[in-house]
Image (cartoon, rainbow, N blue to C red; front, side, top):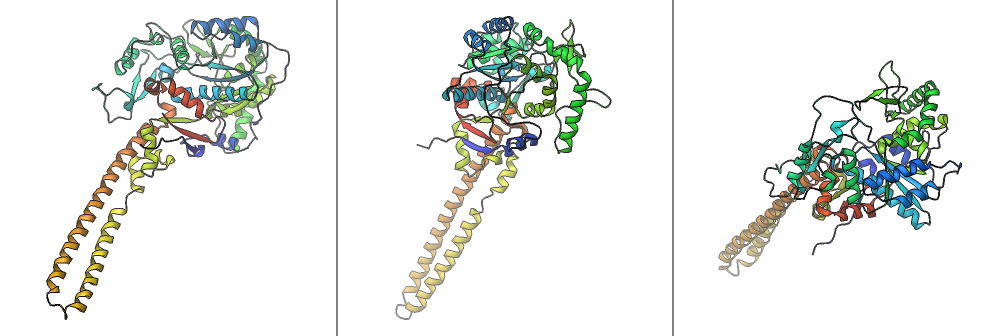
Length: 504
């Protein structure tokens, strides 16, 4: 029986496209962003309103998330607050969405083991208007049942996508999922139509209900469009309008400092324009840039989150951590406490069969982020040529030694010449057969290595994108169920300079 493969830890600097600012920050560079330990933030006596707590409770109940006790304890200031967030993608979005939630759960459990209670919040970016991103799902063809003959198995990913008939900046959270998109997914996987894909369901509701069904953990989901949330943020919006020009100057100054340090700011305004801070929302649901708006931009969403929910820890992806580096001066300007920031854990997953390929064929884990042919070129076996050379050399040497025997013995035994010639023929025959067998084995192993490398690259770097950034976690959940979630939660390592390859 083959040995069960374990998780593989890889330096985060090997992760393609990793934000350099984040790598330096993880390494201890605190010029633009502090790295502080987790501790209870100073109690300023400000508590969330009962209206907000009740609204969060009601909205979560509608999604099947029963978190009343967690909300009441949070409202009384009895627990640490952990938060992450994500856009509400179709069928759960990419794998990194699950990695964010797993990071929250892992941190909560570690805190509880240390005697500290925590409540998990997950911010739903329902006000975003990137419909193409939300309505696109990429599935590994290896996870689609084999009998679906229409699927091209040569593809690394199969993309399901819906588009709007007319270009629009309408918010995506309240938008209804097109029946055609649901039909595409249902046609590929053998499953009865779940309630989270019922007719007329919105991207927001479907996203949350799937997470509730898949994850056995108390999580408070926060709809960015919740009216009570906006009401709680009203003092912040008013403060922003009062300090608008100062905010623009602070952002420009911090962006210049980041650029001079060799980093790329996350947001740069168009020439002659201001940084986008707020949007207004029309009756048609479309967002328009407006100083009088109450819909946040990428730069101001963290400010609203930190002002209203007052998290102790924010867990974000590399881009989100870099956003904080750009907006850090705004926290002080607006009088908002900044939470401790932690990088989400990075995890890639694959069936155990595929993870075994690394050790079986001598492939380094960081090699899979490249072209399969280039990887194989580096592993081109020299053994075939070496085996042939060794066999030729050995055969020639043996022939020389037999000839020496003949030189010594022939004068005494004239009949020996025929036996010597016959023996040399037998020896050469067996050397040739042995060489042929060895070469066949090496060639077969090389062919197996070729197939293995292709599968490794297709799994972890499909279409030249890192798996967790594009591949839908739903695809692996449909095969592994709760085991997928428990494995990632068990192995995830948030806020570390490494990522893991996790066998399923």
